[in-house]
Length: 154
Image (cartoon, rainbow, N blue to C red; front, side):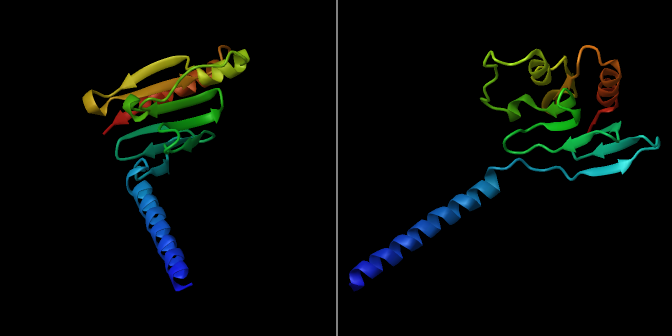
């Protein structure tokens, strides 16, 4: 009986060590480092400024910023699904597969396919900037281009 109890206790300890080690490894090495982000009002009342250790830009206050994370390593500045900017370094995506199933509507395809693929910076500080907007939405197109034009790499 004591031998069975000792085996159970040993198994619990081993499992706890494995789980604890996995959690430690994931937290230490598995996450993308977050920028120290500063959002501040711009001199113009309808604009905000985003600033991190890597880059800064000005954007309209009705847009929402989503920081990069493990599942999607791009910073997103978004007004709607098909009205957004994504800023990233291509090597952050690794082997991520791209493509469609063939059942998507044109609106869905537009929301997943950038209208413009731009770059800013040089060498290891080179960032891809993808602009997503609808064909008929010139106001959004101008807003997104203004975000790109205001981007400064640090």
